[in-house]
Image 1 (spheres, rainbow, N blue to C red):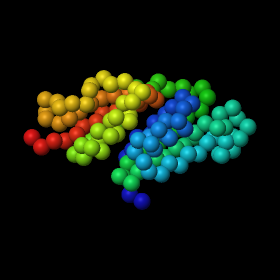
Image 2: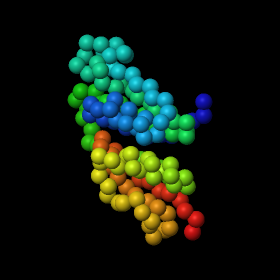
Image 3: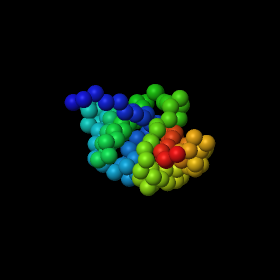
Length: 136
């Protein structure tokens, strides 16, 4: 297996819903494993996600999990997940789904460098940047 770099998102109890949402956005195969499946069947967080991985046919890999009790995290800290390319229809489709129910900080529109770019935070508190390359 080749090395790869991909986002690993942490959630405060809604990883299942978030990862299922991302599967709706990007398609692909989603594997979810709960804390209960890994020896914590009687724990209060048994149904929460210990590890989730979405692999898409387009080559994206997105991982995520619920934080264990006592390890809360602040969503949208010092990162953004970036999507970029030149397939305008595909990227606009992702944008529409990701921004629905979230907030838009930079509308998806042509920018001074010539590309179409926007920034939003989805309904789970994850910040996204979308850049659609255009010919100048």
